[in-house]
Length: 245
Length: 287
Image 1 (cartoon, rainbow over the protein chains, first blue to last red):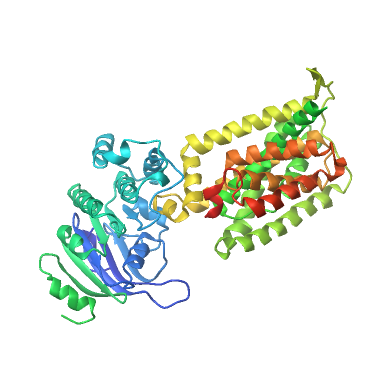
Image 2: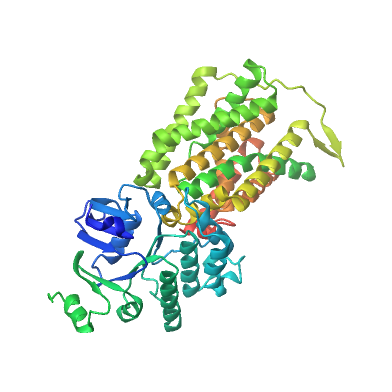
């Protein structure tokens, strides 16, 4: 395992992954993410950002490399067991159970934590108060919510599991500008509550406003990992078009 | 006459409801139609017969032991066959279930031959009520099925396991990242399906003699009921079963009784042409 992994909230070393018998989509990525930080994962379309977080969540098998959460190796665990290790994942699409009500979605979020304790009643109230629009209508089928409301419900479900690390895959995709702002504010509040966030985002400027660190992926490879404050738009443009800094 | 047929049809429908419910549970969670449902029913009837006739257990005890046995057999089939083929697609699983059906049916045939058998129960006089004739077996069917449907409804909508089963049916990948192990839920689904089908086998054995084809006689109505209700919808399966039962009984007014299964075929045909999602299963089937 890499140096500093024990102190990292999320640590990835030499990660390789791909679909079926095809070639690697993720080609040997390393990263260390300090606790209570937001890392924005950005890159051009097809660079492997979503595949990267899916692999960390366990939905795609790891071909090589290690993944650890708070020092515990989770690379060989099933997605469900990774939840117990403190990982929560909010997919880009289909991120709520459409045929369950809002209340059922929220209940299910803490019922199968496999030994891990979800948030306590006080914290639960705090989490739910972040998303008043969804908690007002507990009996509504989640499939009847708007895109933004679904995103909020998905967030709430992930947070109720009291995760160490939250993986967010393009949470603002398809949302109106109003919801983009609200979503990013919610992500920033999540970090303030002590959760480490790995945020895959196409909306680079929105992501950079809240991120502490930036990971740039191009063609499944890490092109840059830097502080968000240090990186300029010109640097990003150069990286997106395949130039070295 | 018509009222009696309606009553008989409702009871036949309730009998079909349990395996239709089992079919829809496994379809919802595992996304394939289990063709072994009829053979599992046969297996349930014979295992209850063993406990009742050979081991002298009272029929209610034999029914419970049979439910446990078939639940175990269903989980064993899942472990040995279905779980290993899960990623090969629904057609592969369907074909595998045909193989399981042949194996279960032939185990019964090999062990018990083709002779018909009956449970050891006292023969009771039928009840007359408002000019309708209701026998004790029919009353037993109504009570057992209603209790089972209530338990399943409670399990599905008021328990964590039920929520998890509905979540896996809705979105298995998301359920996994919410901590729900699909293998565990698949086992629960098979156990539930096995228990329900075994109880249906016992009820079918009350209604008629037990033979190796007892389950096969119900196979088409079970599928028709589950498809009519909308595969994946538990309430739909029960409603579909009652509609099929009543329609089959009423068809005897115009058709010879041994042609009543034609009705189930026609229902399946019409649904496949006109409303593939059935009555209640829009989202479930489209997915």
